[in-house]
Image (cartoon, rainbow, N blue to C red; front, side, top):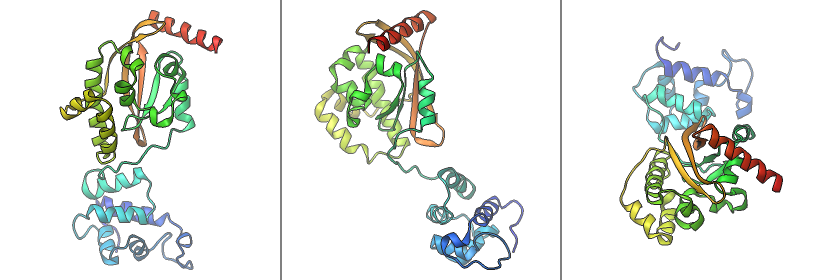
Amino acid sequence: MSVPPGNALGIYLRDRRTRLDPAYFGFAGGRRRTPGLRREEVAQRANISPTWYAWLEQGRGGAPSADVLNRIAKGLMLTEPEREHLFMLGLGHPPEVRYKAAEGVTPRLQRVLDAMDVSPAIVKTPLWDVVAWNRPAAVLFTDYGALAPNERNILRMIFADARVRAAQEDWQSVARFVVGAFRADAARAGATAEIGQFVEELSRLSPEFEALWLANDVNAYGEGLKRLHHAELGLLELEFSAFAVDGRPDLGMIVYNPVTRAEADRIRAYIESQAVSA
């Protein structure tokens, strides 16, 4: 039976399975009416009823469950964007977020950071661990490379590092803001279970963090102004903007731009002087 017109889910499923090589999955080759896997082979790999899978391709049987779609996505070896598209077609919304710890950034993304010569930029996880940075960030903010990976957490530095705390123009406002934004990021990434131990640890280290966490405030970290006291440059004013990393829901990038040309020139001269003295 052919896929009826308008059955976008069925069309997509059929397209995906016809692209797969039966031999790769251990299925017998030989002559086949159409390329790719048969419906019953996809059903076998997804551990669902062959009849139910056939109905999905034919636009029958109603909406599938999230569990069925996840099984089919695994059976068809879909990428994460393909799985999300499958859910949009089958249920009208993306799949529930499943948090996965970040594994660093690609060389291409690092080159994007490095191309900014006076604008500090970092890439962070939903748990606010810094996993990539450029030279301006290392010079003006923190030399992240000198820290152990578990110490490169923005909240840990804000609440437990006296130097970072003293550099903030209005520490109380900054602290309240980042706790609310951290809460929102962790929930959006489906990482509420993963943050439990971290929250307990930071609450023991900082009663101020514990009080702010219990306040249950939520903030959006989109854009704003950061005023920072640098040990040698004095007060710096930087506009920040937050960006999602396409294809990496586990990562977000924050770029800090000098608010004036004079500020940028001052920062550039300082960064160059540090390179000479290094």
